[in-house]
Image 1 (cartoon, rainbow, N blue to C red):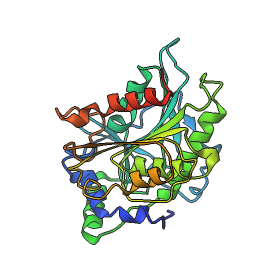
Image 2 (cartoon, helix red, strand yellow):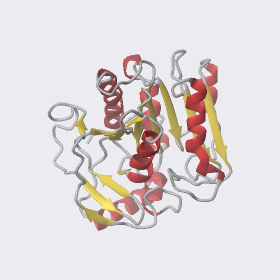
Image 3 (cartoon, rainbow, N blue to C red):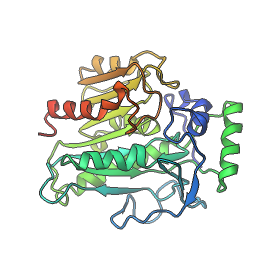
Image 4 (tube, one colour):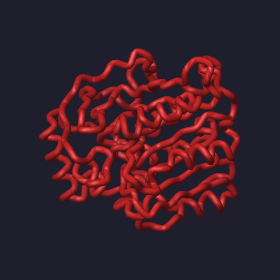
Length: 303
């Protein structure tokens, strides 16, 4: 599989992968889970006709797993968008692509995918869960866990970031191309990502203009400074101070957006850990969805 050389990508160490399986705040923690059949999604949309570019030599197949409160996808090789649409007559013309996290080894499909999409759809937003490509992992769950342990011990870095970014850019393009189909309004196609999904969203938001979202949100993603253009989309960021991955750095990314003269909003919570997603923990970080909604209203992308 393809490996990334991107400088941001290389800042995410094996601790990310170890936390993925064992960390107390991560979306996939608490249980190794039970294998389940790949759920049927009749309205699922393939991002590419035929084999996705870059995956021509892939031989692995998609797997899903059920934990106590979440479903995880692994070994995704056919990237798709799964529409989660508002009830008839409720759509407000805004779309948000939802990119779950999981260290590019899994996708946290409920906590950072469907639950987010359903929350948005209930408020009139046409949501699209992005099932993007991941690094190949061992088919057997016990072998997967063992590989993660070995990776954490060795300092191994995570991979396949470029394929995820390709899928994120294609998702924005596909939603724009089909705006009339979903009655979307110009300038109101956004993207939100969590952890590895936030990394993907960041690359899409700072990439080629034609495939950038109109607004973006990065939930517990990296905060390192980077080059931001003068036409970058407005961005919303949320992070907990006790996040073991990204909570101890500076806010260089916020300053990068400010330096470019672009709108940015940061919510830095005292507690929440990494991977809180849509979980309710009795903490102030529980209210990030309402604050994201208030930000979207302020920006005029929802009424």
